[in-house]
Image (cartoon, rainbow, N blue to C red):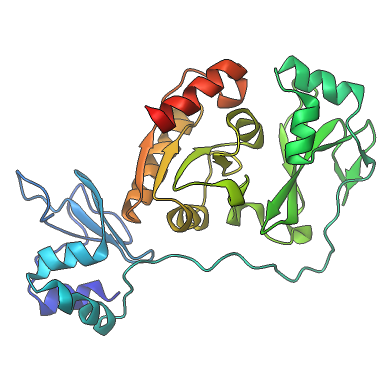
Length: 301
């Protein structure tokens, strides 16, 4: 939306720099929803089409413009159209890409072996249950794909719209880095960070956002993962399309919590209720009983 033209035409005081709340890609004005000092707290993100107040959170485009422009709500749709905007910027569903290479798993991907089962059991997972629900497999001591080593890993297919579009491979050898290896990007049918890991057909309006696939296995079908703390705007938009409320349960480390707070703000900008649930460990490391208690507290508080 051409927010600068709109503000100028409707005499809305605004700034793009020179204030502690301004940053590149944002246009700031006084928030009509806040009480107290007028200090340009309300920002409009020019590339992603949403409002966010650094003091009171996200607000919808319609309600914000009604307050800022002081015009009847039934006129807002036309104003938004006149200035090239949309009520809500949400993405189309991810579509398959055309790659030069076909999708496939690493070599020597087989059924779970004793080593894979022992790894899962040591982490308090039931190997048969996880295999049944998530269709996992394993790799042995010699496993490669496009020159990358995938040995001694649990392979988790990534589904979207009932189709396998990628995979994640988690090492079972302590100390091996990286812990997770994704499918090579030029073999993915849909890039894994353009979608969410989980069971979309079982999601409800309230979802639990976690980092990795093992976190989803622990918390169950109500949870979904963003494949690490480096979530993408495409993933945030999908959350806004699929959920009315998102509870973010990231690891307790500082960087993970910083990313959790950024995701919370992004979701609020898309009019999604979002809050952070703080726990003292990696969600995947919770005991089954503690995980059940956490999920129940989120859903039944």
